[in-house]
Amino acid sequence: MDFENDIEKSLKVLEEGGTLLYPTDTIWGVGCDATNTKAVEKIYHIKSRAEAKSLIILIDHIDKLPTYIAKVPDITSDLLESITNPVTIIYSNARKLAPNVIAADGTIAIRIVKDDFCAELIRRFGKPIVSTSANISGFEAPVVFSQVADEIKNSVDYIVAYKQDYFTRSKPSTIIRLRDDGMYTIIRG
Image (cartoon, rainbow, N blue to C red; front, side, top):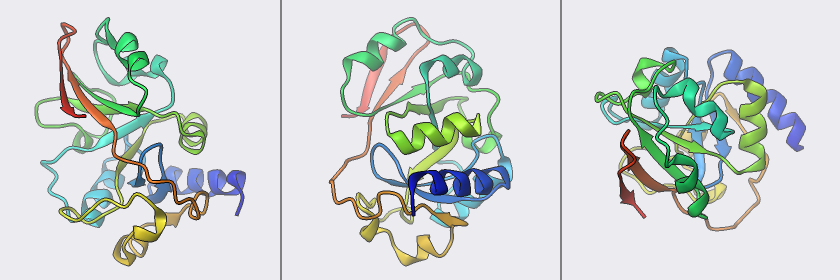
């Protein structure tokens, strides 16, 4: 299956409130429309994950940050440019997202993707998508498609064919908590 066909099928699933198993710029992920509460509920169910544990969302460009967080700290672009690995930043005052994708303290974890498939999908969808590792909570995250459990594969609405045969070992993103005043803490390096 080609890139374009996977994008079109993924868009249809996202628009209908469905779930995807897809390659990201880090590891294989399970995702949905990050603004759709019912779709986000499906993700928690698929992963057998407590809703108290928040999720990461993906966007395609730094210019979209002000849509989903009330204040973008001044240091944000410098921080993003200084780290070469994929980086997820936890921001305060999340907004315009499904309530169940936002942490209880009002924060949201956002990664600006560099992966060609994810960036194109998000750009054409026009909204952020959830990205959580394609595993049942508590089990190891799959870095290649062959490691994704059948239980996950059988639970999603669509499985992206693109990059299923890639065996490049990736790792989860660096996670940084960024305060409104520009101070930050590295949570996962």
